[in-house]
Image 1 (tube, rainbow, N blue to C red):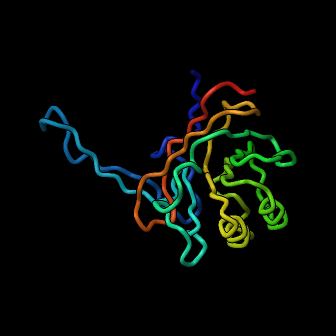
Image 2 (cartoon, rainbow, N blue to C red):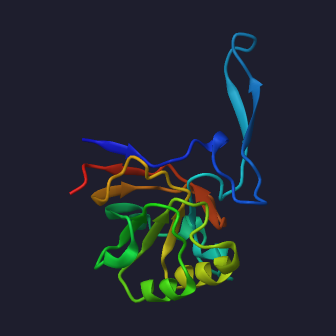
Length: 181
């Protein structure tokens, strides 16, 4: 079974302007200590991550309240969004940004998860509006993907967030399973 890792390495990842850069502190280290231990500091939206509705919707679902089946299942990788059909999970290659008009169109589809390569699904000017449109419609956002090794086609996606009670987002390890069909 082929697996394609779509995840940015966390400590060298792209960071959205103004966000905290991930870092770590080695508090115990061999051979000086009898074991290795690391403390990490990061934002919920560093690297490859999921945006839950709570990110832009007051009283929206937190990351730990989302159904797990959103993050696993059939997925379509596309070069452009003109052909999503009845797909529930779509990953968009490239740096194209979702406009408010396109976001409104997507709300009439069966889409439950939209993934993009940039750190945000939209331009800075449209961030609030696009996120609110998509998240309010129940479309979870998977941002900061590395789709360079994923040819367009159908796969199985596995991209589970950490169980962070009450948080609006979470880093993920995103993987495509199978060969493009």
